[in-house]
Length: 254
Image 1 (cartoon, rainbow, N blue to C red):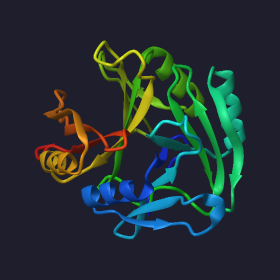
Image 2: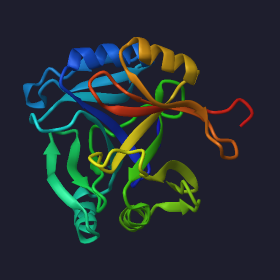
Image 3: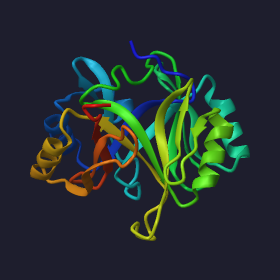
Image 4: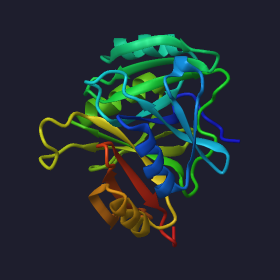
């Protein structure tokens, strides 16, 4: 049973042009199985499972202008209150709050630096059923044009703890880190907005990079050991439809 603390990442959802192709890519990369909701109101929403537990999802694009991307959701006791606090702190509320059947209540926002994210108030569906093991979610990474503003926003709205660092401050709750914040530099094209990326744990980053490449993904960064104490080995990919995400493996001696 995964304990999801309000304010922490609770779900990762891919929006894609071609759902069968996404199912094949991630199924082969992570060994996930895919189950599409038969209810037409969910438009083909498909849950990825790892050993029978919900690991992530893929959904069709809501409109042709929507980018292919991974979207992180953060848990909330009350979506409406969280949206109000986020809007007061400078966020944009794009959709919702709205009911998602009997599964929960949801809203789509972007933070003051432009990074999209969602907020989820669980009812029948709580989110991740597996985390922090190979082929499951294990980290969240924010790339932003204004690191200080982003940290201030999430700390204020979600009550996140911040572990200061000159390059990569880390964030979490209840003394448990679950993400980090990176300032976007000149290596990012100017048209790339601030964004969240999920990182999935794997057994072997280099083997995952080879598999992702064979399946048509581009390796954007790594594989490389993070130059921090007990830093993991990581790689960042762009999948064949254009969504970016990362993988990591803890160091053997960490």
